[in-house]
Image 1 (tube, each protein chain N blue to C red):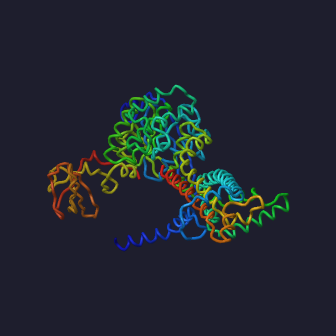
Image 2: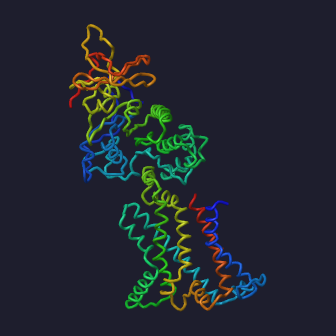
Image 3: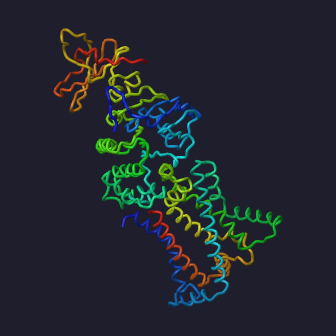
Length: 331
Length: 251
């Protein structure tokens, strides 16, 4: 399990995976443009970014489905470049799960052990299925498993090989929202228990924030920022990171998140505030989002946590925030 | 009954009544199309006719051999086309499905005659088999491709990821996954081969008369209850094959 000291320092952790100046050129674009990063052992590491940012290409290069044009991939001191996928101590949970439809859950999990020539694998397979709570469903075919069960079978199938690194390619995106939250929690608990390095590929900032020890935020083939979930949310390095991780009100070069933006009919006497006109107030149950337009045309959103609060459209309000909550980013 | 129901009944009657009449008259004791009483005479004659027996043996042999060859080649073809996402090449394979049979037959005959100038062989069973393989491949590709299109592309990658090499991934994952499609394709290849008259009659030799060729010759000499008996038997046999194929496609 990763032990985190202070803000973003994983001290004393050896590096598991090292990417050195990785480049992948596609006919129309440089999809991976000089990516370097160090992933500590036992870490839950997320590659977060919008579709087309290059995260999937990086995953494919680590797994061995694609070769980088430049750069090196080093796992626990061993160079992976040029090795076939079956020669790499890396396994994958695919977005679509990619369970073999003609094999039972048990045989899906046993597949990799059989390829290794193991014969006494029954206990390993049963333990692995039990770990993901599927001991009872070992004899079922994938067609007779629910979405969540398929996902867990895929996880058991990848983990039973005790890989040095587990790649997860958007593994939760095919699940419905309620199930996604539960599976997310289970995923984190399993990773903490077994201590294998997880590299999680996702475009969902909430998933990345809630699961990761470290996040690398990517955009257009480059890394925008690497840090702990708190660091990248509270101290985003760039405007892109600030905006991708959550909503931001931009007042010139200064950003303020809606949950830190205060709103009232009058401001407390001693703070600097901005005058605005309410455009809409959206009731969300646990909070109210008030969108208000300032004199210079900027629309600022304030998230009010008191659900009883309500504003009329066109009402004059004041907006203010703590200076310490301002996001200071480079472009 | 509502008008649409009547319409449906009419269509089904139009489709099936001729076959039912054929089956009924195969049990008629008269040679002519007047019902005189139940008889198995024509079936007895059918089973004792030496020419029919040989033609049936030829047809089954040709269908079996061309099915095996066309299924293997066609399956590998569709796998390659799917892997390489080769749209133009897939399209050109389907071309042979829409080429009129008489054209395919003449072109194959021309090809064989050209080949005879270089190698010493003649029209016969082997040329029929080759011709049947040629036109069955596109049927096999059509059916297997349909199965591959619904397959998950990540399956082979998952197999590689779990330690299988490329050959094992194909043999242990892709092929078993395709099995229902391959079986259905083989059944289709078998029926189109068994059924073919036009191409077969052009490329057959003296030793390779098939059942459709003999039936055609007999039917041209006038209504013959033995022809009805064979037709009824083939109809029932292939009906059963199609039912099996439907079952396989579903799994």
